[in-house]
Length: 345
Image (cartoon, rainbow, N blue to C red; front, top):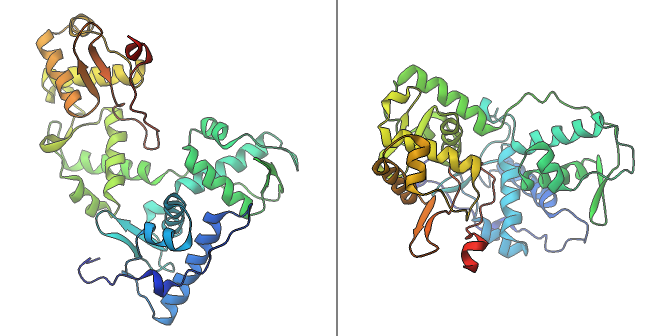
């Protein structure tokens, strides 16, 4: 899609006259269905065409009177259904929903969550009228992001599988089938494709093309490439640094300099032993733990601080503190906080 030739659709021509909602009505579902219908009808009449850009989420949200977060979820649902596609720094453009989706987009996270929740209902013998766990508990139980689980639960309400009762959800119908849950999320599929591509085209120690190049090759967003590389980095298959360093193939650890190996070990230490705000061991302690020089540890810590994962403070209660979790999950909520003991001191 060429952004210079794409027509920008205005909010006025969409005429989104859906300003009022009942207390128990799901806004995301209603707005999603309205937009699906509008896109289908407008494509059929020739009013719009594939490649036209939708107004910004904030513009539509302001006109309708809902939050931008609500519109974000609506746009995600539309993208899952193949009606639109988002491109970073360009916007969200119209797709032809009758065209077959790319093979790597057949299963969205929301669809995966829906089938997982259905499986939980059947395997645990839930009865009609019985309350299900909260979305937060379901998120922990399924290891799926809380936001995605909420979307899945709302979808099941619209399908008549669940019903909302006060602040909880109950089973309304068990008349459904559970699809085989073998599909992966888009990020996992792209990670697999990336891994095959890297094995075929690159050797250990070689630098990968920029994320913007990989984005075009795999026909996905730059964020999907970024998250796929995070998965491969967590496996130890690649090593990613911000800025000019880029992403390097590291299936052969001998391709790394010593401080880079130490940096990977410290990253793993932080992931397995720390939370944001925690104070890390001293350079001397890391040196003894990793059997390397203090100078090498210092360089590795400096790199992690440069990438935004650590900060250094001086004084009696100073040290090295965790400010972010390297390679944390895509949907993790990160709280930039200082350890309470440190603040108190």
